[in-house]
Image (tube, rainbow, N blue to C red):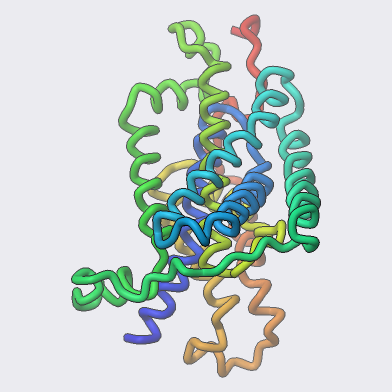
Length: 317
């Protein structure tokens, strides 16, 4: 039971950032805008969030500081993504190239700013956010050790974001309009939907969630931001594609890749796996090998939004 709880806890830590960022990517792409700049948004969110924690740790303590830092990270990702939205929607630039440029800019900016402030590219912080056990809930048989012990508040924030994001896109008029803009923008425009505004909304939501996901990845796994999220933004894109741009499937895909990441990073603590005569470098490759395999088999069955990546022109009705 102890091993199962350990694997579950580690899987949660690695899955939640993937889930949050993939949901953000879904919002952007369901509106019709490809956002490959999620990795850059995560880096910027992680940088701003850890910088906030570093500066405010002596003033604000406890989980309140982490909640504020998550908000700062989200707002940073939101502002960062404005450039991609403007280039993709208003200027009708190539969306993949624009997102790639954002991914190149983010680590350079984070390293430059960190060196300016700290003299090194790392932004250090003290991890005071680990929750050993939630009173009462942690004592529930089976569920308690799996979900309410040895956790971070980011896990619960991640699930909350997932359910809100699912409800908004599936059960509200806003979500219906957003999906219409990604499937048939001409028809959406005909019935009075502002396609450009909806695409802006979807893209900025993706940036906000990418920023939150960046900090949600760094805080449980490190004590410093190092201008990288180790390709987690790209893994999130794979999760979104594996999940067929559907919330429930994205949830399952996030936990699958989270489990792969857990095996890659904690294999030495898992009985039955640690005894295998496999080099550690092979274990570290597992999440990325899984990504390639999934994309190979899913590419032909992909159900991407019909107007994804296609700039909208009113004259193209």
